[in-house]
Image 1 (cartoon, rainbow, N blue to C red):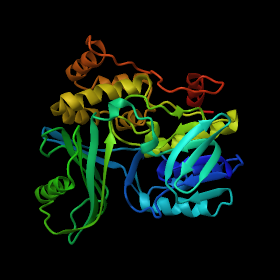
Image 2 (cartoon, rainbow, N blue to C red; image 1 turned 135 degrees about the horizontal axis):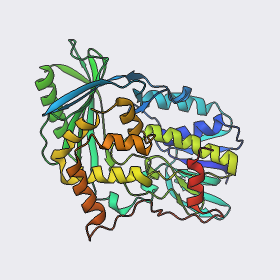
Image 3 (cartoon, rainbow, N blue to C red; image 1 turned 90 degrees about the vertical axis):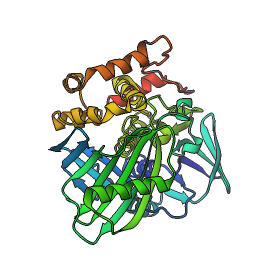
Length: 409
């Protein structure tokens, strides 16, 4: 049995980002990365808003500064300066990070399947289908091993299927994205098309739905086909790749520490933003913060994302998505009619309270007042903001640790 300083369960975006930050830091120690898949491919696209690149390892493949929102009652087109909407294809990201990690003598990568883990006082143990490993800290990015809140399991989901298509004629404006096109049937939940063109003849066309139930794949494909025919008179095109996913829209706090030395990262740690599903930018920021805290405090200090006023905003919007879906397109149209810089700071949770008040004054109040009543004041409501559901068995209270991490060590 070999001992490691850090064990990372899962070699997806969050596992690779954390491993990359560890070898880029002044910390010294051995790292074990456990990933069951023999090969990672272009299984997803990550997008995020940012003023700058996140670093050499996270450079985006494409970016846009011209954005379009469409609804049946109107549309909005605007420039997002100084923010860009950035895209990273997972296949290239995997190749770049695995190449870098495999050349580092401190990193061991094994292709094994995790069966269980447990904390044993001063260390933690991970059992795979082939070996048993011990580490000072274990970081878990596998949803199957995450202590997911009960509200996730039958709750609202964002589910989608995207087709990377190539056409024989010029159809798209490669300088502009359709972030949300609500000019589709709004039946059984909020639905919109998300269009990212990378050339006049190539684009990701994604059909996205917010609802409790998840569709079968042929239904998304039919919806995409109808959309391309209606909006672009496009019948002949080649589908080069497909990607799909299901993201739980949960504003509740995910436990980030369990059993003392197990830290949950990525979506398994609740880093997916409840109201939008964006995760990648948060993963990179969280990885940097975890490494900084280990260098400063000698232990990882995870951030608690689903707390404070942004959890409050997310909860109200999700109530409307679930109970008043017909109001949602208009809300987003009003939101993106505000100053773009303020909107993107808000979406990135970098805005201050005064900026947020300025945005809210431009939104329709009645739907949010209804959501506020049902979520927080109705007698049957039991919601609590900022509650911490995890337990830390070490010497410092987790609330104090989280506060320290948020201060930007």
